[in-house]
Image 1 (tube, rainbow, N blue to C red):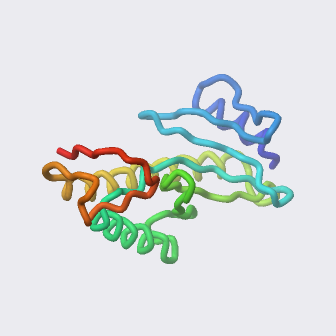
Image 2: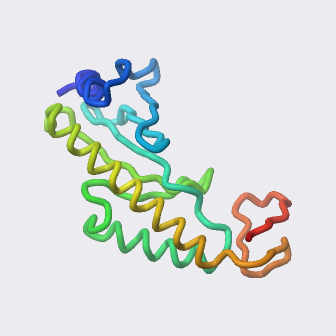
Length: 161
């Protein structure tokens, strides 16, 4: 089923205005507790992605190592992601959960079920990221702290409580 029709079905399920792709083939909307979902046409003909931000990659090396281990373990055979996968946008250091769909292989009921499952995994991974950050955020860390990896390279002093 075409992505445009799937978005109409999803709009009805969410009881919201009709969701539509813009001129660039992208539809952004917020659901639930502020989860920002994006539906975007793939460069592959007849396919599209659903994706959502999980959070920022931590700046402390210890946290990075721990969350990377969790992300890779969750991606292994999709044991922690359902039919989706986790990735890192290197430009923004944003952790993204994404899932690709083929229009020829999905109908509206199945798409709605997949989006509901996807949203559950978004919440799960946000909790995982928050738990890693909460466990290790103690005290004040300065720019010269050897345990902080400054991905952006900006001279910002971090205060972590």
